[in-house]
Amino acid sequence: MLPLLIFMVSCAEETEDPDLITSTYFPLEIGTYCEYSVAETVYYGENDFETSNYYYRDELKDFYLNEMNEMVYLFHRSKSTDRSEWANEVVYTASFKQNRIIRNYNNLQEVILVYPVSLDFSWNGNSYNNNGEENYFVESIGSYILNEFAFSDAVKVRKSEEDDLITIRDNRYEVFVNNIGMVENYYEVFQYCSRNDCLGEQIIQEGRSTHMRLIDYGKI
Image (cartoon, rainbow, N blue to C red; front, side, top):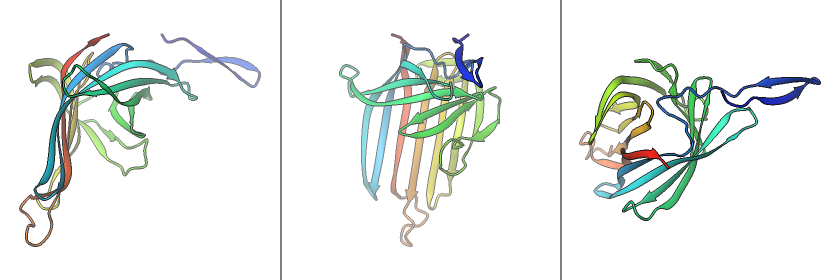
């Protein structure tokens, strides 16, 4: 049980608990870390692209209580090309309220999981930001193979799966594992050339493909 918070309302003393942390697929425990291999390709134009490979290390380092009496957890992400020298990349947060895990990355709040987790359950991933409604849903629950890892209890959240083969491809998903957290993030968003001379040929005009895969995890 988290410590009780005491505040004054109409000269009467009351107590209120922050939401209990019952997130198993996105555990919020200070001192844990995950390392990922990242393969990324950025497309600037037709036949103009750049590919890079690097590593991310996410450490859950601290937390604070916001004005809504919600626990907010601070993740420090660092980047490396060799897993020896690490440079600070970004600090992002996650919170748990109303049975939702809300991740705030680069000032974009996104509902990444909703409990209880159930197959085919859907929700608006953008309900806490100003972007348009976007339905995320639980695509699968169960065993999952990722490189050398064989997980027995994983949840795959499908964010988008669209490809009209003419103008756009939008393929995004994340995988979360019980007692570990996010183990895979796949982002593939392209715009195809839509001129008359290339329409329907799936020539990428611009976009980005980023694939993050877990390679190590533990506690500091």
